[in-house]
Amino acid sequence: MARGAYRVEILPAALKALAAIPDPWQDRLRAAIRELAHDPEPADSIPMTGRAEGMRRRRVGTYRIVYRVKAGRLVVLVVRVGLRSMIYSGLEPRSSQRPPRQRGSR
Image (cartoon, rainbow, N blue to C red; front, side, top):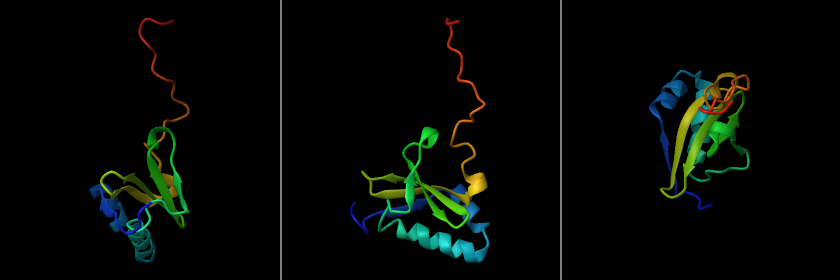
């Protein structure tokens, strides 16, 4: 992938979450986000699956950066930033949920 050609955009909710993180971690997270402009798919990032398919996540200590690479527009869009224990809520379907029942089938 082309290096140094990507613009990084951060959604307002992700920016707000980043601002609430303690400074030492916030600095590390900001540096990791900046690095995505040069390499949007670094070796330490992992493609996500399920409802989050098409997104990637990058680990920074106990924190995660969830983002999408829009290669056609040369944009890295940071969707979420936060603790691992809370970041995935709403991205993946709950295993306890049953799929919706289709009308007309029994």
